[in-house]
Image (cartoon, rainbow over all chains, first blue to last red; front, side, top):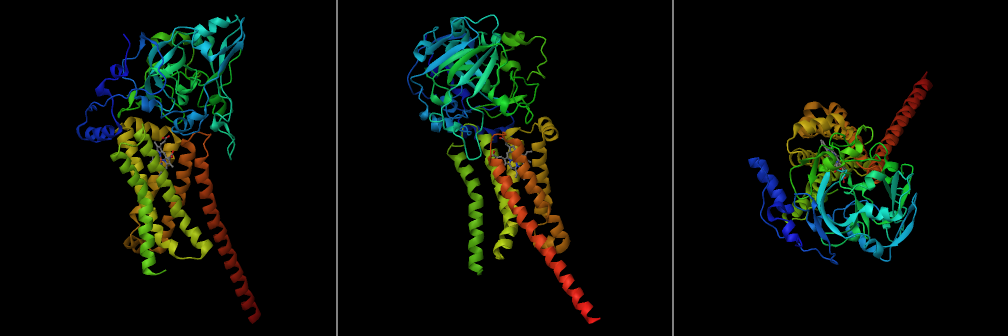
Length: 314
Length: 214
Ligand code: HEM
């Protein structure tokens, strides 16, 4: 059966902003949990994308409203404000698009985006997304395990890491134009994973969300989603995936090494220098939630880090 | 300035200063406070508090540079409005952001310098607001009152520091405010330097007068 968004977004769990604030006041008065009336889930706009729901990867919480997930984005290629990507997103041209997969592998290859879409059957997975800024969403992504793509190029035994590179083109990404006071990040945006993290079945090469093609502001046409790590690890608008034997330099780590480590696993016990990571605000909810170790995926990924000091390897 | 001019000026200040609050209330009524309303409201209130604080600190430099006296008549009003927004900003943090989670808030105040300096700035503004009435000025005496109210500089500096510290290093906005503050303080420094020089000059002139007598 094909899941529709009216199915996965049950009435009660959505709070409009107004209800949220009204709820806040009611809550302050009576001190109980927020409940609000039903608001209809909007049908997603844009080109539909078929995918088979994978029930094994489906968090129980209701997905975030589509409007919220597409208007509240950190995507510095478009600008430093969260509304910039939705406002300026149309400058990005997701077609034609190529993804170069190379480095320490037997069969390096440059994939056309249409080929990328066909490497493995598209599945829909509902993951929670935890931003390093202590807010979170629940998003139905469409894609397939990154491992499927990596296997096609046959990584060599020496490959230990994977580096992702986002498109660098100030014409398409206005945020990459040097500003009056210099740039924000060191472009192109690069991110990285250990090879075993990249090959983990949870790591999703993503081409869509909410039943449709990935909107530009969410990293079109292809990105990764690594649900047990803070959101910035999940590189967007990828043009290159490189297998390497050395730990890749990552964009935010270069910008602020003491705040953003290479691993950046969601960890409620390791604070960001400027705030606690112990709680998070789920977009659409009033009260903070407690943050779960590895964003709730501990039983699947904790074994990747046995024996590691996660305070040091933040 | 005429009385009418003064009244118009005050009405203008009230209108401009309350506009951000009105915009937030309107956003609340029309369900238009972004998808993360608590963060948005916190930031709007904090930024308005800082702007008004800097506006308050700009009045004396404006008088120094222009020679006008009317800026000083706005000092109390702008200062109190800045304090009002800072209090709202703090209240939102307690009630909406942390919902009375005293443990976490205490932790934040102790562990995060940007919170510590923000709270210090707010605490420093409390005695200033409390002694802002004409009665209190009389009771304290002009000199003591003026000395106490120099704390507003410290609050301004801490307010800017709070913003610099809380923002991602790649953002420039906090530095814009800090630069404005620095310029405002530079005008005062320059002016008091000028005052000292003038007084020294006068002393010298006096000595010469006394000396010529002997
Ligand atoms: C005179 C006192 C204060 C001033 C002038 C001030 C000013 C500011 C400014 C300018 C911002 C940034 C707004 C933006 O990003 O656009 C801010 C944010 C913030 N301030 Fe304050 N603040 C003051 C006191 C406090 C206090 C006492 C607290 C809490 C204890 C506090 C907590 C916060 C928080 C939580 C944020 C939001 C940070 C974020 O969203 O990243 N502030 N404040």
